[in-house]
Length: 328
Image (cartoon, rainbow, N blue to C red; front, side, top):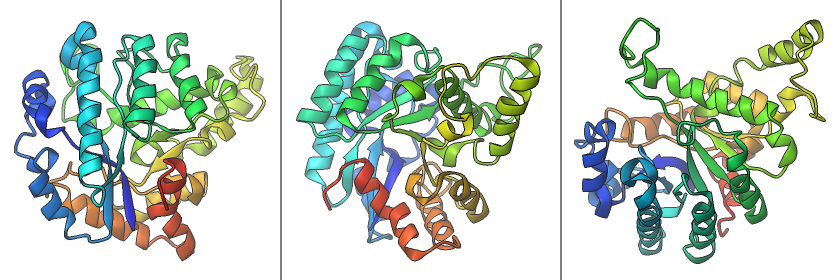
């Protein structure tokens, strides 16, 4: 079996609301596999051993409904995700809950409900969280709660096309905000958690980083150089309170295989994280063939990795079962 732990679905009952409220998603209305289950299943039938874990794309409940309406909307989204998993267990292995993150107390209650009653398999956080960095003290209770439940947090990066890449421009050009901005935001978030001491404080914290670890595997030696050698020269004291080297904290993150293929890049991530921290994920259905292109190429890329077959099985299925506590 191949368990796709990072694919996206708009809950069908809520698609009109999501299309109305967010322009970047509205432009994807023609991507019917985002919300039409029949179309989605027809595509999945091309891969008889494929099963998905659902994550909601785009805006958060706070973005869609404001802080006052976010609690109710998060519940509605999570209820529908759980309903889909219960109705189609051979299609969907689970889902990640969304939260009304402007209200941390309500978020903690929703985590308990989503995990214990709805049997969802973790939570999805869009980073930055409400425009704030992930290491702000107000978010620490979320990390504590997920450690107690021993379930993962999916980080999904966000950037706005309205934020320019250079100060004298008015917007991001050439889709840079999405093409590269998402990788930068994931890398920023990891770095904030490492050097703020969050990863030190919560050694059992399990976070899934999208897009194969973003910039970290490729620049791992740069991490060591900057925060070991440079700190000694500049006396910056970024590592005060850390009991491990910075790069060791970066290795604690989990990551997916969502690169639309690219076996050499997967091998780079494998060399950094090891097979036990990599999980099969496609980012479907966000490609020109409504998920078929990315799914096919990602499967092929993993199969072409020069690693033992047992480790490929870990990436395709075993790690997801263990991390999400799925039935064997």
